[in-house]
Length: 107
Picture 1 (cartoon, rainbow, N blue to C red):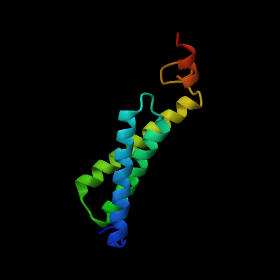
Picture 2: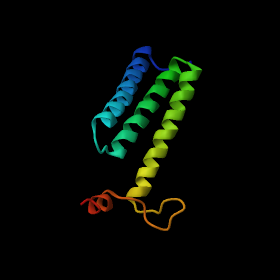
Picture 3: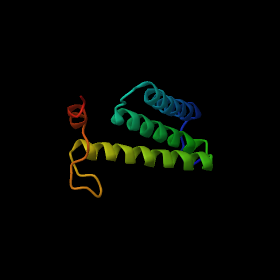
Picture 4: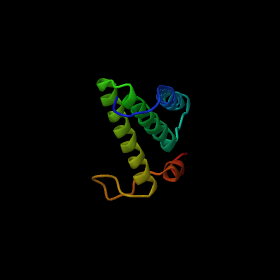
């Protein structure tokens, strides 16, 4: 045990984290044009909640997986924020794609 939480709270946080990750997966599967903030935010929240749960019920492979899951979700959120704020894409002098630019190109 790395973190001293009651078992019921650890389990509740773990189930909430699992629900977040499953909802993110269902959302991206269902939605044609998913909101990247919602998708990555749910994944990040799920990974963090599961990591907290895993600090009580230690399982090193699961901790490694959830830590990587959180890093990737955080990276996705940062990419989405960079695109939204109009920062340039790496290796390009043009602003990153935005939803408005994509809609303007539609026939």
